[in-house]
Image: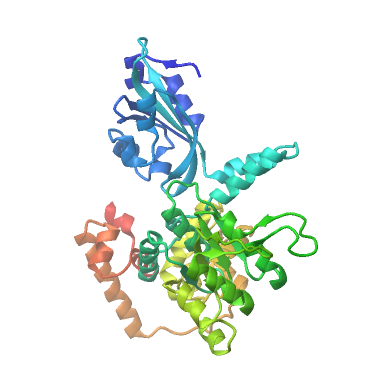
Length: 461
């Protein structure tokens, strides 16, 4: 490609045209000096680096992106185009282009993110009106398998149970042990499994292959996992790779492992223990290089007692066992999740304090998946301020008989209100410091401020 030449003045003071290109033409962009220190960032940069631009400018690019190709660019003097790697847990396709002065000296570099998240590129490929040719299909398949859609930071929750679970998952990710993830339906098992994969493959190149053990008949599941040789059975006209081989050095997710056929459990155990397997109809041992992550919402202890699940397979898979708490055991996360869904799904709704209190009291048998679908359902209502009655009707919660409050309850609320107001004033109306002083979470404090009618803005005035 032609060299891009700019003056040193343009490098340090980009004009409106260059600044407009940086802000509008790419998902993110930045300009660095010849030593790799960031001079300018686009308006979208905080979404990538999770910090304001004031904190990014002046830092070396490798502080923000440890896999940055800038050292390679500096050594070769050539642009590094179309590099795919993980930035803050998200698969990105990047360009790094050298900037030259009039004497052909490198005086800086222009770094851009073309696609933030592989899903956008996949959507563009799907939306093309022409049919996929062989190369396009291969590229789409490679992108799909290389992308893990979630990172551990995508698991939303401020409750102690969630924070402890995420810390353990982050610790597990750096090891190569099999992982068993347990939790009820809709609680986020795939997010955690995908997050473990992403945290253990920061270069973003290793495949993340998923297979649902309940979605494929037992007679076909063996060949899906192990592959088969040509002529292994009627209709096997060519050799087929199984999921073990397709996963390569990445991660193989066995979803709903509790429903795996007992005959296959034995073969899976052997493959995990000996790190090798054979295709169906073959006699050549193939090394198993992928990490095994299994998920289940089944009661494996009961299945073992009933002889439906092998104890030795359970003990092999559960070296690192992660239990995801159901939503009813982390009710303080519900307001945080609702705010997240409203922002992520662009919902035009809000909830009254009474409605939110009722939602926190509900058990949510479908967990986070049910909560998200519920928020989308509320967005279809004509009213945008969702009341307690609307929540009660949508969730099928019967009306509660009116209960008169006792004078003692009123006096306790009055005392609690005074205590919180005093703590707010002593901590400069800072919610985080006040919550810490009162030994409660920020969400709990917000809920009590709303319930007791404490007007923080009044105190500010």
